[in-house]
Image (cartoon, rainbow, N blue to C red; front, side, top):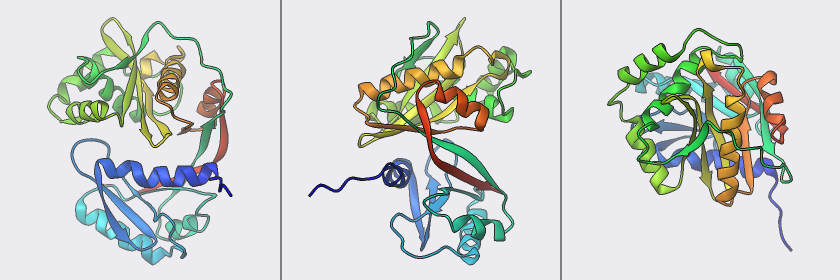
Length: 268
């Protein structure tokens, strides 16, 4: 008899495995804290895979104390439908919880047309560093409205982040086949970028961000479509992402993503 794994079970195992390539895992019973080793976005704590017990506010407080000790964000991420009791425990410690649509690509979703500005970036691409900088400006000005930060701000940020080690780290992950990066490039500068991170046939599209001054041009959708094509070419059978809000979720829905659950994020 063959046992089928549900989509949310696949995602839970993915969430537990993908940080381990660049982070150490610290055991806090019902919670696991991932601590990044090297450059890049800091990680978070999340429910321990297959842990049978509930999570208490005291458990959350112990993790938060460790995060403060390490000087990293007091951050937690989880799937609401999988760990329904965690929200109350997190909120009892004073953290606010934010909801994000968790979406999985339909198996029969057609590939979107190739955008002329969008391409995948290799490990030795001279624009890799610049592409990794774009999301910093994008996420500093959230939403989909056109913003003030443009080419001048991007150029300054690229210079400021030279030598931070992020590009070298991601380049090695590209060589190892555990990260793929796409970017929309115009006049020698990336205006939008994102990546996906395949593990055992499952991959998450993350970090898709558009330079605020370049929004409302369909670049985020085009970069996401390129990442979907690349993921499928690599044999991924499950492609998923978390949308920033309902407006962004509607953009992803045009590519064939369907909401399956709610991703919850809490950060001090």
